[in-house]
Image 1: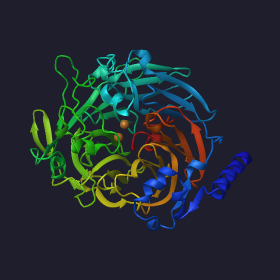
Image 2: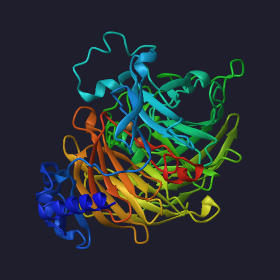
Image 3: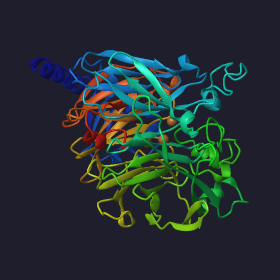
Image 4: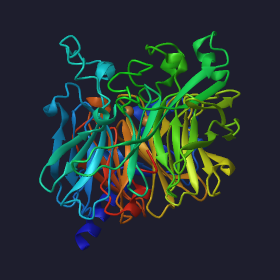
Length: 536
Ligand code: CU
Ligand code: CU
């Protein structure tokens, strides 16, 4: 105990003394080239609230803190696999690499873990992968495509169900192969751990699955596709979205003869590779090719309300979240996030063969992305990006989602223009704080900020953490926050740690790979409220 205390004290003092922790405004110039450059043209730093404390994380060193008996699961994206780190011993517990199983382009993308009473003895997780042309967008001088590795076995969109058996990781099932639905982006476990949802923003498809155990095979509970019908579809690309139109949500059915869907691999892709963060503008400026970019909604995630009944389908191009009732699999309403737009839109059924619904949008003021519910279910937040750079806050305390209301926005004077932009979010276990990764463009270092959930104001910033900060995870004892950074697939990567309660910076953990995600394996279903279930 005293060791920990004294170390914390040393780190805190070092950060304070050696120009690390600065209160107020000054540190922007000291917080690394990327940050000062990106703040130079932005709103003057004198608009920062004087009470916002700023930490230059880049000055901190490796953490040797005892972090508790937790297993930290991180996918390596272009690294092709996933590893589990024992936070108690600092060792890798086990790992898996999907190319070993015959996947010739396994981009290990997002994951979520089921609770296990003792993760050290075993647990299961769901890991989506990308493939195909997604490997071609990082400027690598690669011959992977010309050598034929992006064909049948390298198209990606696998949904791997993996088990850790106490010693090693075992690939139990490719849910995409079992069901015919291939989805390569966010995966989220249901709040009661009875299944999971997955989505894919290249196909605009999301699906809900039951939980298979051991050698069982997963079944689809429901699947939807969301298409965009622009009001001025024959005009320019940008107006196709900005001038409004309709979201058409369609229930997808399996083929009667086979019981399977026909959406494996690249089947159903509207665009040839995913929209990387903030790349929605590439679609609306006609720079992301594919079979049907104009119908793109960018449905790339599902998050679950902790109450266990409602899920939100996250739609990037329109900054919308369609709320679905998982009791009857009917959509209920649509939250529309941009500032100045109506917050809760009705959805109308227009056909029943197949079931089809429409939502009318008068305009689309900006795109949106990552989103989530607070652990008590009383708030929902979603990022508005590019043309607006803020986070819409919805009051979701009412039992009926049609009464959920957009109440305010989390803003920061430096969030102007495309970057820096609020990206992923998660909550402290007690729900008093929200943590938000803040993305700066390559190769600059990204950061993370802390928002007080009573006032929705930013109370602290950790800047200069590392390139491409992605999702965060919290230890379920309420002690630590882990901010993973991916290094844009080739730069430095790792995990930055700070405390959940006192917001004290702790330091870094080495963590290899181009992480797009992370999760701490929960030990009970209750912990899913703070896991890869309610937030992205
Ligand atoms: Cu996303
Ligand atoms: Cu991604």
